[in-house]
Image (cartoon, rainbow, N blue to C red; front, side, top):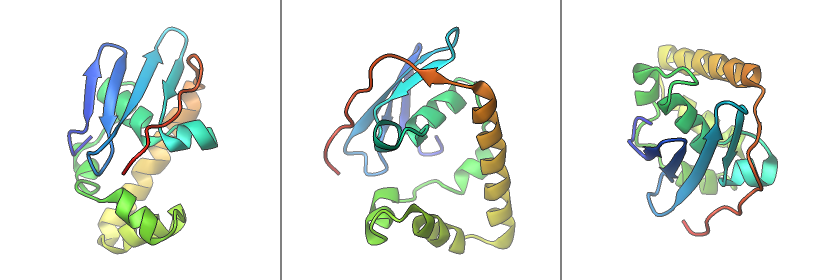
Length: 136
């Protein structure tokens, strides 16, 4: 969100990848508490990926903190993930290593807060899964 990569239109969004070369579609039904996104994590692993999280933050369903978000601005996530062969723990460690102790703590606290908010939403899938876009 700090990078301005989410384009919202009602209950749908296009959220662009960190490379800017592809976008993910997100749909949300607040009454049903159901969401669908076609990012890799949502499609292949079944967890709520960053496009859906960014959308929910943008529309006020999840908390958003500009200062904390700015700590993640401009990160080339895809490049770092590829460097570590999609070992996301190593990617996170690399990013956190570039931050001060106070910034690390702020990020960890915010992630815990958002994780709890997501859990409390008890979201279900909205419609049929759609394959993620290909490309970089």
